[in-house]
Image (cartoon, rainbow, N blue to C red):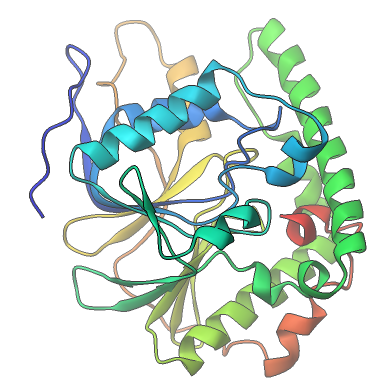
Amino acid sequence: MQLDRLPMHQGETARRYRSVFLSDVHLGTRGCRADFLADFLRGMECERLYLVGDIVDGWRLRKTWYWDSHHDEVIRLVLRLARHGTEVVYIPGNHDEIFRDWLGLEVAGVRLVEEAEHIAADGRRLLVIHGDAFDSVVRYARTIALLGDWAYDMALELNRLFNLARRRLGLPYWSLSQWLKRQVKGAVKAIDRFEGALALEARRRGFDGIVCGHIHHAEMRDIGGVLYMNDGDWVESCTALVEHEDGRFELVDWAAERRLSFFRPRGAATPRGAATPRRAAAAPAPAPDAAPAGAASDSATAPAAAAGAAAG
């Protein structure tokens, strides 16, 4: 695919990717790091951009309206990519499920689909879905999901206040809410079951791998011969999954890049757009077998403790 070159800021070098996968931005919430995402989008180009669900938080916007200039900038930059030749595919999640009524339509160059098949540069077939259909809390117990969403919102508000204090102390962003979630044993187990269930579904349908979001946990690993990749979120981890021209996949941790920039001495700054890889994989590697077939139905074992996983 031939891309029209996007206008860049003076002295800025665009990071060029074959494909970029983003999910769980949650535009419309105070916890959304739209400023970080806009910074990432501003300096990159790609042939395909997959928006893997929960880009806009319809649950939150129905309760109270929050939208700032950074949210506008994210929308503007996505549409700018579409105008300049990027194929933009939007797969709605549970928080932006209203857009599922528009599946099959193309709006301003953005195509809405239920799921997508991505063919990597090396020929691997990847299933791209949000993943909420494999979370039994969201699928069968919406009241519990909403309670989990409330608890998660409280954690994100605590995270926002915590980082406001850090900024006033001259310290960079660090996700308290993500750290708290990792300390909850039930959340860790729920995440593991979710990952196993998604990998099992991809293998059942004959795919080489799967790309998803939903649980706000960036990950890339082999599960029973299937490459499982979760692109994370932009309220906690601030991560994107990217594919290079040779088919290598990489998790870019933009919050870590911002921290490195914060601590980098004057005169030692790298060119704008230099990203920090969180994890990379050129090809699937052997790993333990995927979870049993019933794993998906167990993802509700700790809806309150695993609020981030269950309410994502």
